[in-house]
Image (cartoon, rainbow, N blue to C red):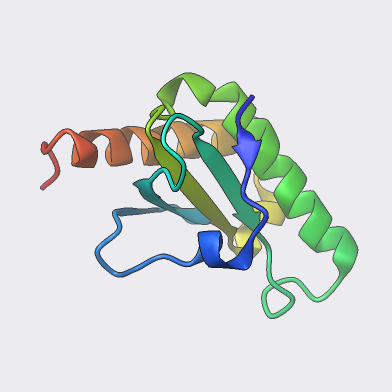
Length: 115
């Protein structure tokens, strides 16, 4: 499993960083801050999820989906995932499929095949 992003400055992204959107989350990708140490970060904000239990559940779901689709994560990239409200009502299989589609989209973008 990859390391996680812990510093605020590492969560910051630019508009030029590729993004993949789903109904349940969106994900941005940028080159690794430290070469050879790919990481991911999870965000579930108080503005979106009022209760801590909801924020924790959203992050737990995204962690599961990332673990399931780890083969689609590029080794030279950092990822930042941000949860959206509908994530709390989605079935596990649907979430995993949405994560796979998003990661495949980012992989195509990195390879220059994006539309």
